[in-house]
Length: 459
Image (cartoon, rainbow, N blue to C red):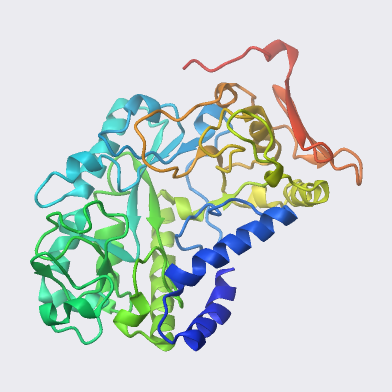
């Protein structure tokens, strides 16, 4: 899909307006069209695929840490609590917890200057300290193209130093305050101005907080700059505040560059920077070179990135919060069977790639039809797989946790297979359970073996 956007959408956008921002005006419509058409055909894997807006590498990478089939440790969560610290107790229920930048925003947004990163690391340290065994893997956030100066000194000291202006994409023909109203968003907020392009997407207060000498906002890294690339890899992404820190073994590397612009950019990025298609292609190429280096180094260091995950199969119908099926979320039996056949062989996607099963039948409440999604998980998962929640907004309330995530199913004794050719019924044996999925009815089952039918992990 991204290649289609690169080749065709940029040309269409430039032809129609010569200056319009695809990421803000055209891409939301295209994304809606794409997701709707894919849902109708039953081939959609996950709403966010599940890399979100991050860079998706063509290279397969697996963690170096030992695989586990323990269900409790095969769960994943991307929590975010605006109002304060996320519950350490809840975090310890999961096998992998990756903290979003907006976590504890009510705390760090009161600081002057703002220091989001320091509190992000503190939250990770709290979980790590409570789990000396390391059963819960902890991750933190980095943005790979948007330079958020509310992140703290790591961004502020470079952005506020004119000698590093080449590290950031600039407004076209910017003359400081005199150019303020020439751009959208403007170059100035209150009494602060910056000729480095920036927006206020995601930032409470519209950029009015104290983020150093420059307006509080989301700036854009220029990956074409060679000196920037070295700093980006070795002093921003892989540092003592990320995977070189004891207990942090995962990174959520957000956003990406396309020829139509920057994902999650607000305003007129292409128009206000003057970057033509050739410039944007060069930026994209440089960005992807840096990201490939980053991904390789993350694996070499024994860590992992969320954006390396593939989506688990989409075969469970969508359900309303009350447990009734959403008629718009129907999955055609033929599409279901075709999907499971791809997963049910020795060299399947599940066997070769790390998978995230975060497309719960009800995205905000995994306890709705939890046995159904757990059945698909157990049926198709490989060595590295997690079931749970991706980013679902910021909230103080705990995420509903199904009992199925704390049962002991043992380990798989076979791959999944179709019971009879063309039957569209699939099964898999586990040491303590038998799992089935019937594409004809859109339903599955997990049958615990008699001796262990009541086995639960101690919580």
